[in-house]
Length: 91
Image (tube, rainbow, N blue to C red; front, side, top):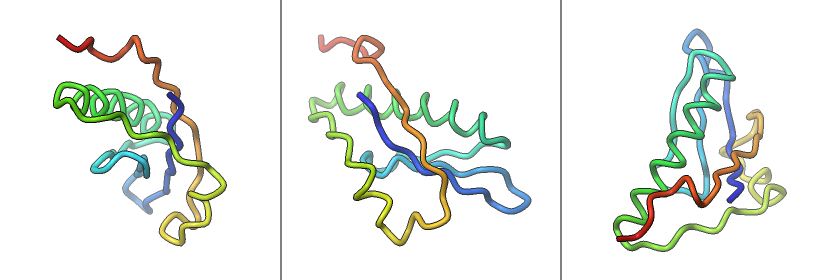
């Protein structure tokens, strides 16, 4: 699953990242690389939580549509690729 994320440089505070397709999925890092690494971990954890609750996995949105959202203006976009086998199996 390939989830788009947007990262903003927060003056004097590092970088904030948001996965728009996953509610309550955001993180902070001191560097861009750190924010992206933490975002990958945050997405995997959020998907694991959804799966454990029996909720469906959100479908990743279309990057072109997400870019048009005024809330994300000025952000840098990246794609976080989470493999399904990283998620905990349903028991």
